[in-house]
Image 1 (cartoon, rainbow, N blue to C red):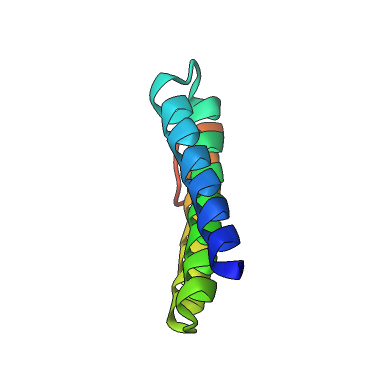
Image 2 (tube, rainbow, N blue to C red):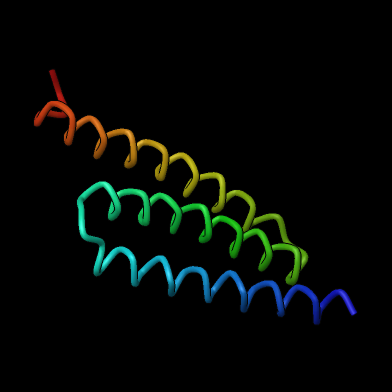
Length: 89
């Protein structure tokens, strides 16, 4: 029963990733594209954690932690670039 629920939720998260990719492609402003990219990071983390639960291994959780750190740094760098035009002061 748990396997079916995990697969169903993984399909829904995959659908959310597709919708985020659509917003990333057609986003009218750069801000919309950055928010879509940030949401895609979060959805990828959720999908990797679901796969870790499904396959019963802790390796996926470490990968999700790395993606979370890189996603935060990437979003902060893109936001700073939009505000100031320069990342490194």
